[in-house]
Length: 481
Image (cartoon, rainbow, N blue to C red; front, top):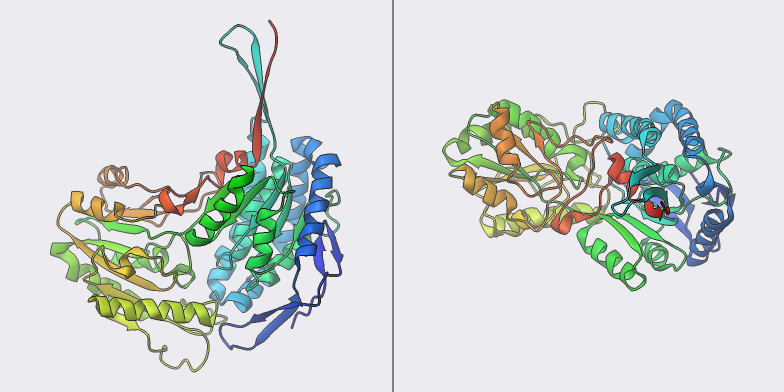
């Protein structure tokens, strides 16, 4: 059991201001995994003050980008040998199946670090362009300042890297608040940062609850907030940033649609939905939980989906054969089961799954992967983000209706179109209002491409040069001819 009693503030391990602790409970065994120090508001103040000094007076924002790139590459070199340790930490603290932890929670963040460093090496940090009125214009990209970053529990290291690395490459100082459910992987990152060639104050990592997050978001020393989480919490963050006109990036919820065209192979679709809709136990903002099927072929596709779901092993997340692990908390399990009950009450037809515990599972916060059919757009299970392994089938008569159903949502984060006719698939995809889409695959989180949503799914973009620019300000300098 990890009993870490210090906090990582400004690059040093220091005593917390309070004696409070965070308890990490295994979602599989319901037993205590770790007890670590919890920060108080005074610790946030100390971290922001350190970041403020590092940004206003220190060398980091003034370093040549090549120097910052070299530090990120050194961090990657430290990260790579500890990927198996990281995978096991994530499985222990939030219940992701170990095979998914190894690929998505451990290897993917490392690949992203390298890709971000390569991207920064090509970024136009300064350029000169001819002015419309005669003289040349120099455009500089400069760091935005002190960043307050908040990440949730569902993809903890992936989202830490998505915010920490671009902020560092941009030259910012950052105070990172991971979720209290998943502090262990965050502290592994802090260990990697210890004694790295970073000036004092540049990075602090404070796993904490919502009150700590609120204190960080409202802190007058923060120049930008980068938040990933629910849409409801994102609205609160945006409101807190508004009075100071503080820069804010919001990567929020989703209720994404997989549009299956009438020429798609049912087995290919079902195999794809095992990832697109059920990865990480459905605890993913990009999960495509609305499956749109041509009415005349609904039975053919749903049979394939049921067969796929019934083959998924639910249980011990440390078993390499497990595909569906537990929900992260008892509260989350009960929330998902409540939506399943709601779907039945609303008249959707339950084909597989339900609220009963999986067979052979006597403890742990498990939900069986569940498939509803006869779902209509007005139902709560059709409109609200469930964040669990619950899929809903919608029938449509033609492509126009499919597009209308896909767009009939408050969200717009992800989606996909399934067809062997790529041009047909692209034509449908262009009509769907979403920040990211895949053809015959769930959207691939490629660090070279901007990621983010429209409507209630967020503001701004992560990844790609666009994501790096989210941590930069543009300064224009005109020169007399």
